[in-house]
Length: 321
Image (cartoon, rainbow, N blue to C red; front, side, top):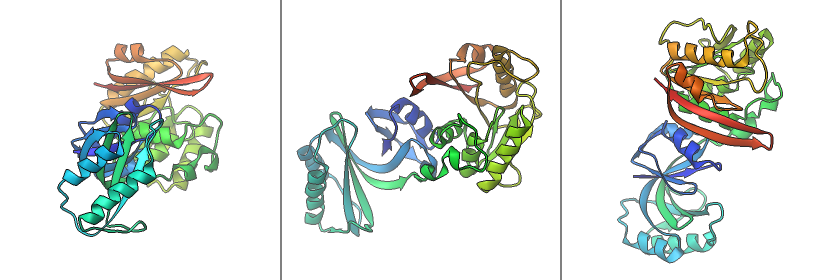
């Protein structure tokens, strides 16, 4: 079993993304989940910070955590460090927890190395639960160096890389897969799909956006098999079942400029075309598009609401055939 430390404020959405890199993800407490197995793809997750081999779970107090560690079998050698974390509103002295748990490990023959330990014990307190685990892998937290404003081509309203990465992961982005964004804009989702090893393909109605998305992809080192083309999301230039996953951010509160289609017709057509070319889609919008998705033949696996600011809530639906 494994301990997953989740980030953000929406644990359900974080767990959904984690399922792209872990098996049988189950929420335990705010910011915490367990899984029966994990893969190296945890390194590419946006809203899971760490995965640790689970030692056990107990009450959210230091004495209980110490009792759990004292009774646990430890089949490791080398130096150790203890890192304690209190999630959100949980009140615990993390320094005291690290000191007490570290003392138990020293009594069991381990040497402490806070700078470069061979093993790191994670002690995470949340609500009424404490979970202990040996750190196995961490996600690469370099999203702050890839803000939309830092791209060669930028337009206001571009999606934050964290959300774009999560959407790409949920759609199935990984080494060897092809991810399509039929309304790619500046290419935020395409960039994140490329950075986790997928082949990103984009379509957009505006030539300016196509040029900008390709410029951004080139900037982030995407391979020659990736790129964006000008086209119509309701008439995609791809064969049936040629795409592994689709992600798109539907236009917000305005009419489409594609062939004079109304927004409802545009999104319905895009959902129908996505259903033709792929078996999985993630759609984002300022309203729920699940009725249109079902009409296009999709099954709605899950739906999330993410508050962006006072005037904007993003509705995210995960769809499968």
